[in-house]
Image (cartoon, rainbow, N blue to C red; front, side):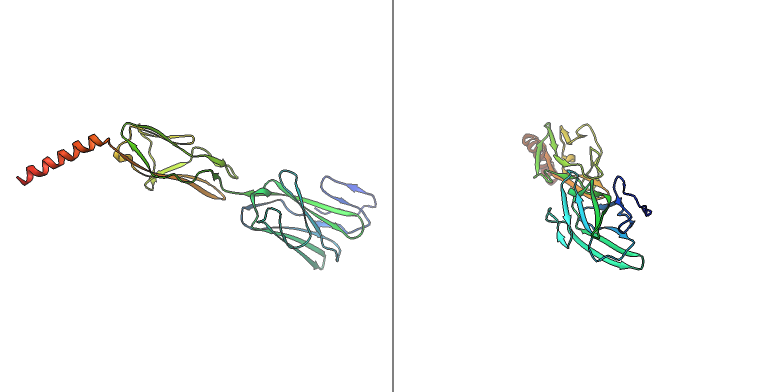
Length: 245
């Protein structure tokens, strides 16, 4: 956004300028980035200045953080690099955020230039995409005897951005899970009723969005009650002996 020189004080929603100082010729742009990646914001003025810009980051909770030099932000993960470059048309200021974290989602970045006169500010909004998060990623082996009723559930702590839909996609032994009268997909897991040997396997729920994916998995070793197993083994033994005879 380019502001014309007007010999009156003019106040806008996100910018302030007057005829006594440089004019902002480039605003930072609204940007979207995946968590852990890098995003760059720039602003420019029409004069060659010697004073660096002041950058202000505001998170979704309106907590502000000021950046004037290369530094690690208060989240302990996001790294900020500040660059100032003279061009034929003025000075370009850049803020590079690397390994950006999800706490900056729905936040904003403001560039403030002070040449010793009036302050001139521009602002842009940040969208950080990140995968969903689960409280429990895996469960130990589950043994279910035939005829039992059992639910296996997950606890999702963050649906991510963009939010994933529930229920998730399920696979068993790397094939798409097909529901039947014994295994049913519910909102927060799976429901097992009258489990058979054919239901044993490795079950995986996939939660995925544009930022990545998270899985919840468990193994089911289902079997018949011990007395049924003994009857089957006795029948096999009798059949083997009959053949040998």
